Image (cartoon, rainbow, N blue to C red; front, side, top):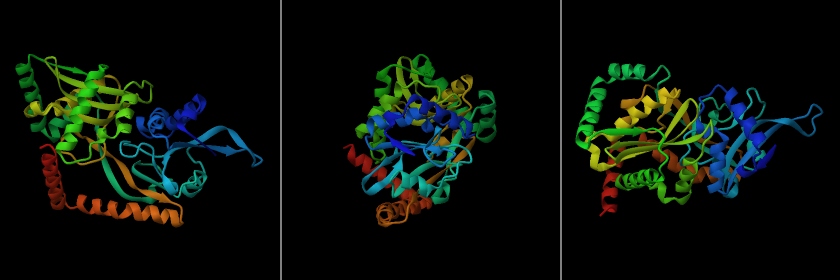
Length: 364
């Protein structure tokens, strides 16, 4: 097994990674592609990739072909976490089906005492047994075309679809027409989106992700990434010539991972974010994308738009020892406290109202 920085990954190894991923049968999530790991590596110096190779028939040396890839970030005391933790919506190793390898062996080879994840994809048999919690990641299935998706919406929430399309027409009348761009390349639109999102984080009392330079730089890196398995896509809804809602995400040929949506609060009465997502689903279906992954986390707009859900997991895989114990003590109490609040709707409501109040005070 060889451990390297993402920049050291050869193109031959990257192609082997893509082939293993394609054969896995899992949805083609762009967060699991080498391009995402390489981009994180450019902004997170502690990023690493373990390249797994089978030994030769005599038990010595490495095989000619890599059979697995494990991207991770390494912290102090050998504590590891998923690549891009905090923003990556799909995590895990890319391994050949049937590969005989244990999580403990992999962590030992990487000199990791633990590996923490919060969006481990389903089917990661090496790590799922170590999961502490399971979550739904809502999705929009447009594999049968947008008209079929609209039919689903009419059946499960007819008022939502009718109201949203009526608001779109009113917005168009007021602004002199609406225009949707699925893949906007104007960097000014990306800056506008990031400004809206930062304001939203502050307004709701949450930590502003874009105040962290590495996240802002990662988004700018991925905005110009163009690869079949991982491309940045900035979608913008315009009212007249003015952007009123935007979304930046990552796409493969068949999956659009929804990542950073935001809108101009001045147009909130028109629900521009919902209009944007409907237009994204329509264009994605026309381009052959079958699945829009809305990402883990409860939100009313996700409930209104979704047709189903994937499963993701949170937890940590550990190698027994004092360093793993220290990692557990530093992480598990906070995780359990968050879980306790999240699983009690009334308490979660109080927490949300408190965050909103903090946001209002912060903006004064």
